[in-house]
Length: 240
Image (cartoon, rainbow, N blue to C red; front, top):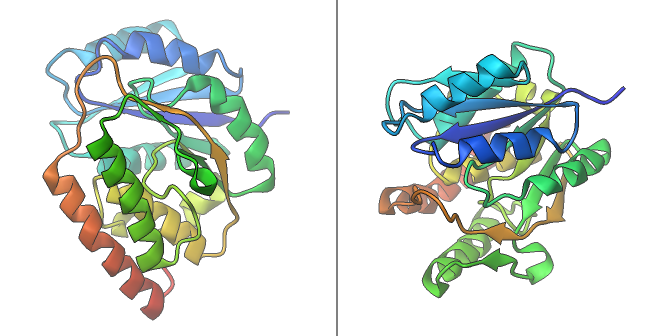
């Protein structure tokens, strides 16, 4: 019997994307369900999600009051999943930057791993579509920087297309995860690695969004720059 899987999709002003991305996710495998974590989107994303959930028992929604950040949205989703019987928990963007058709590949890879990452930069290859060179350079350099500072042995530590085994999330004190932006991705992988879990990367092609607006900001970049040094310090002094 297939392991029950939950794909967590954080949203903020994704009313145009949600009606397309959720059916695309669900069509990949009958074992998959979707949890939309909406941060009080003023464009009505939450209402759209509620309508879809009312029509399909495989769709679930959490409403949060205001824009509270990517990391805390995933933490809320993880806690929701762990309170139920999901064996596999995914992170995935709402804007089609993560191709839903790769979900079956994650389900295959997780059979021999505890955490599977969708990598844009596996073995030095760059698989990103439509990004300006400045952002691509920033992202690629950030991953080299994070790997050098923390020792985390993965090529794409900032990517947000992931699949965790339940035991990984159960082993991490989610209330003590410190980061909230893209540094959150580094921190979660680092904590899993330090606990000895098996991490696998599979190649994906990352597509820049065609609807809505990017949530990247200077604050998110600054958080990532400093967080890797905090992780290095934590990793030396204690099990995370």
